[in-house]
Length: 294
Image 1: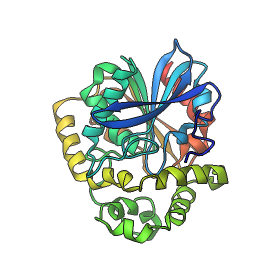
Image 2 (image 1 turned 90 degrees about the vertical axis):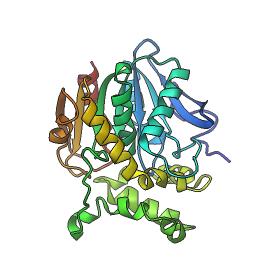
Image 3 (image 1 turned 90 degrees about the horizontal axis):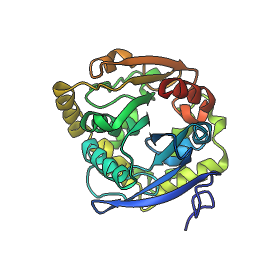
Image 4 (image 1 turned 180 degrees about the horizontal axis):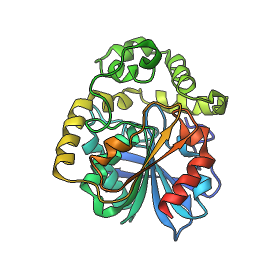
């Protein structure tokens, strides 16, 4: 039922897995590192799981206590039925961290992890020491409302519209998940060779687990999430430091100008990488994060 990478331990020395149930949703996490260090919470995106951080976590463990989450609808966490707006998911994340006794923490956010991390930081800013956003646009903030159609750029964002179509993705991809996942991981990476066969099999396992419709729930609530974020940004600005990590071959341009509209303390850096920075370039990313969080 479980791969050797996933059960019973995390597969990383010094890290262990756990579950907490929040509002009826069972959420999975992997934690470890320096017990007395600052807590750093890692949240990734589609179509991945906590496993996306497996190379970065040991590099941070000497200084920080690291918690990598599977968001609702992701990895080994429960898949709620229906759509899943990011404010709802942010509240579930806060509930999980409260159960873990985490009062203050930093965030490292990639892809949909940043979709959830922004409303969390806006709603629970008193708990957040800093936010690092990696190659990600946020609905209503920095993700364009109109997606490009030119063939040389459409490959970066076409999936947002495709995932938003009811039922069609499931019909087309049923029993072909491996084809889609392989394209997704390799086409968006500058170094596709970083994904081993074992990595692919682990992602395929969680992608298919209990059906993968849960991951699409975020896309199908994107309009609701965008409106929520517009309302949040109009009512308050983020006060904690924000680091925008741009991948020079990634999915998004420089995010600093857009993020300055919602946060008072924004800095930026660029890493030579494709979209999957934590897996393609974990050492440069760890160095930037250590400079940022201290």
